[in-house]
Image (tube, rainbow, N blue to C red; front, side, top):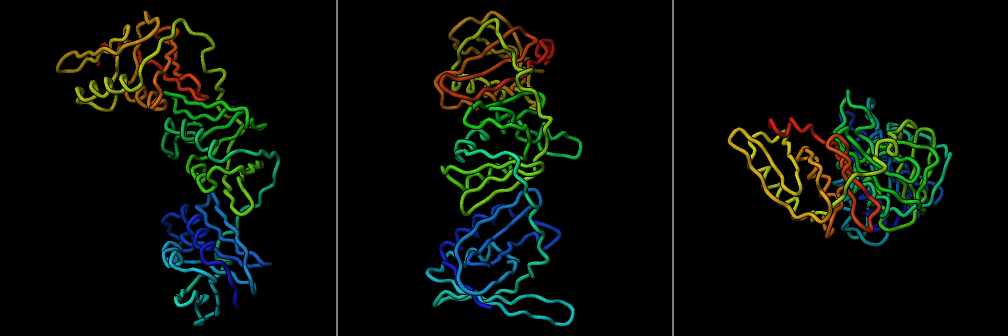
Length: 364
């Protein structure tokens, strides 16, 4: 059988879908499936949670096979230009069967032993319940704002602490000690859900394009005319952000994120135990107690700050880094036991850090 595709388009598609591949005990799962049928060539790769597909025009007969080493194949395809011709011959030695693929793009060619397509897992069927038009770059930006708060998945950690969550006009993430969220009315989901951040990272494939996000009972599919990301979702029981974020504050003040991060880094270097570092904040002065002595530094604040509170240094550092590059960040405080909320003027994203007990900071 023989089929033809554009070499550059095929190379780009193969590079796109190959980004999801991981090492696997099942060799075929390290491959990329190729199906040429009805004038189209569709490439598919998966890690069994997320599926990436890319489609391009094709000519000739119907072909199907699985590249066993797609990243190596992609290196060769990067040097092809013009018409890329595929020709396949079925092989069988009595015990095993495979397809011998010849790729030729004059004057270059390659011969590859491929897996049969039936050995590759089928992509789960997706039944759309809700559909939205979104900007891929904007959604990726929102995810990047919040995903730092997530924990690494294990068998004992709840999905709420490892997945990016969507509810109404909010995209958010949390780990039980801090929360970050972004609000944007251009995407207001009707049914809350959660999905792994690794899946959403593939939004990069779409650049700054407008794409369709369709949601079903088990899967979220984000696609344009020739590329798609389909990933498993969980829910609809997501975290209640509105119930956790304080509606009012007793005082608020502004800090320079650059200066605040510089002084937190100074204090961090003075502490031998890097696991948990508790900082006492009082009217702009930061205190840390260590086995060798007590250390403090001062940051300039703009506004009222009469409530003393404490926080874990790493969590506050991450929260302020969310707003890196901004001239000022607003801190909103109720009392020494309530969450500390951070925001920056003109931005749609927010951060919240739970306070540490004052006695922990005093005894650290």
